[in-house]
Image 1 (cartoon, rainbow, N blue to C red):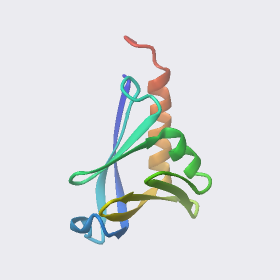
Image 2 (image 1 turned 60 degrees about the vertical axis):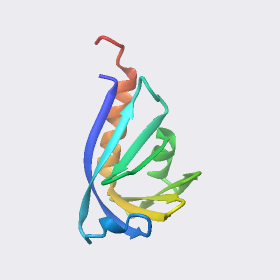
Image 3 (image 1 turned 90 degrees about the vertical axis):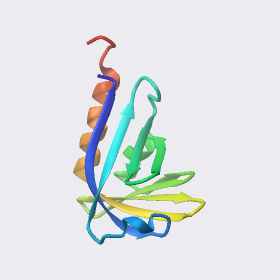
Length: 119
């Protein structure tokens, strides 16, 4: 399987471009990796038309120390949380994830990339 899709829950910390998501609770998020189409990238999809694509390496670096590139910034927040900041023409969305969910997703993506086609 070269596609990894994982569902996670996240919290919107600041949501200037995602006003409709401000429920003060967890929101559903889809983490996606497709080794065949974009072997270096991951996608994070928030509810509605809010989707960002950035390198898997950026996500991994951001779990350990602040990292950023273009519209996306990632940094650890304590021992169990990771923050991802998304910038767009409409504003900025700051989303907080459980680090374990992101680590699990990255592990699955590396396993998918290492699996030969047809296995």
